[in-house]
Image: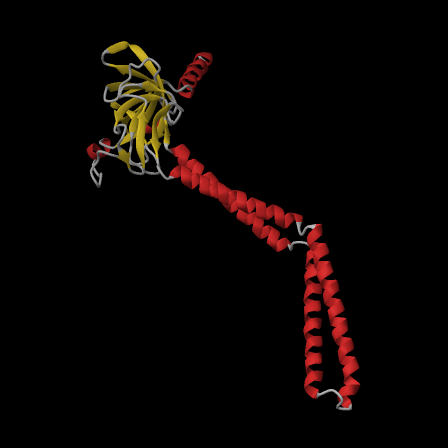
Length: 324
């Protein structure tokens, strides 16, 4: 008797430990992500390479635009970049040997002139004291001495700067100018590339909004591509079912016209806010009206899933085990 009782409780505990699985069914309408393909700059449409209904792959060229001033703008910015690059090279190399030699020659001549002027003053000083030379002439000689000495000192400082080379601050400023010019060229080239409209996703062209010869503004869609390989549907479940649904769960979808064909998908999002309910839910009946959105994504390669079709979603959700 004790053995049978123990066996009974063992079976009961085993049954309670293993949660059963129940299928949750809900119906929703298929949706597809549509991407508007446009340029960030205005331009005139040169070519449109696809029509509505065409299947395209990510990276395919859909249309080509043009801007009359873009090529000249790119050339101007490239010339500016070349100019700043040349100035940077000149700053990095520093003065040429010929420039240093020329400055040294000018300094030598200035030193000789300053020395002659100083000797003239010394020769005239005793004569001026004896008033053999007028004070006016003596002052003029001293002015010449000061002028030649100042010129000599200026040339000496200039030669010293040439020998020391370009200051690091000037080189850094030239480098910054080069970087700015190159960035300006890159910006212009990016604008030129943006005038070639590329499909960002694989799918089907659902709208052709521009024709050759038209001028479209920045951000104005030229074409619309529907990402038909990835369909989504939003269904609603009750508050009792919601805890049994998890993001990443596998689901199965059925179309009314093809009841024997199952489409595989998975749960990608759960709503955090209830819908279809009164503002204040107090009664048991009102609490039963609480519904939460569940978003499901399907990867379809058959082309059978179309936006707007109703689809029944089946989610295998585990039922919590009953307490013994």
